[in-house]
Image 1: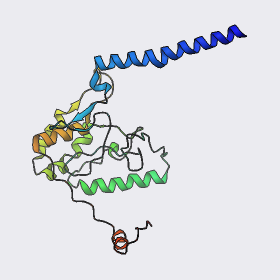
Image 2: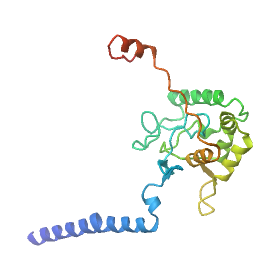
Image 3: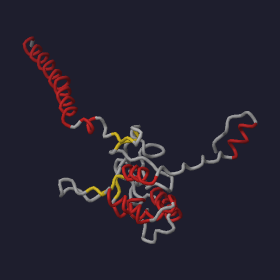
Image 4: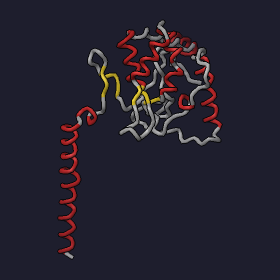
Length: 219
């Protein structure tokens, strides 16, 4: 029994050192030498060198002068990198159907010059809720809105989309796609940053409660 206990202790220590210390340090060192940008999160910077996001993580864009990604169920407000997830709602879910219908109405309202049907990926979330890519077709569908908001010809915006199309990985895996964040940064580089949207007006209830010195109550 004593011998068996000693073997178990030595095996545990060796396994801990190999898999808990040596292996992680070696893999981390190799990744920093071979592909440091990917190992550090694929962070994207603007023209001033400030980090504005990650090439691998979607973020929401509400300004009409930018391309919008597909909707997100990650976190309470979506696009939460700490809460990667899908909605887990099935095709018969009324909540899912209502959300899609609301998104369809919003997209048609915001894109009146887009005559083609709304691409399915603009109303469906990905499994992670953080998919940073759209198909070229979904990007081109938004071109009229982006061009109008920026006051430029649609062909110039289309050229930005075309120049940011990524081919299939290794030529065979996946489908052609466009990284939404990179395309929006390309818009800013070529045409300047879009005018920020005005702040959303405060709810009347919140204003009234503040005037009375009481905390606003949610309904």
